Figure 1 (spheres, helix red, strand yellow):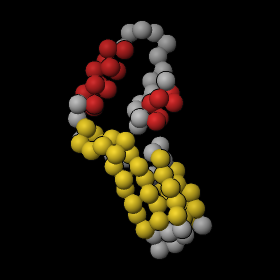
Figure 2: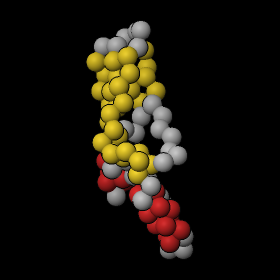
Figure 3: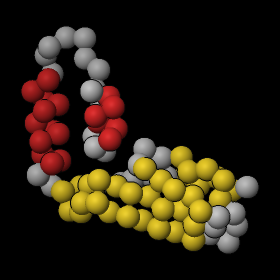
Figure 4: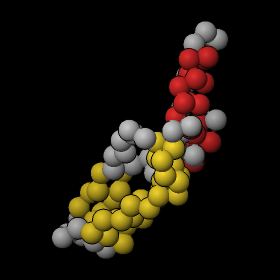
Length: 86
């Protein structure tokens, strides 16, 4: 389930008891109904060489350019990525 969540930009929850699942499903379903973009590609150029890209999304580094691919983006959601320089 964790791999499925990571591949779909979903969230992972760990619960020891059954109570609380209804709240989690309601929140997740609300997010799905609030999708504002699908298959979003964010590309940035930097004045220095890029080393690594640290984020939950799929990313590619090519010299001074970084490209992130997001399966979906929800309204009001923030996404963060860290680009390490060489």
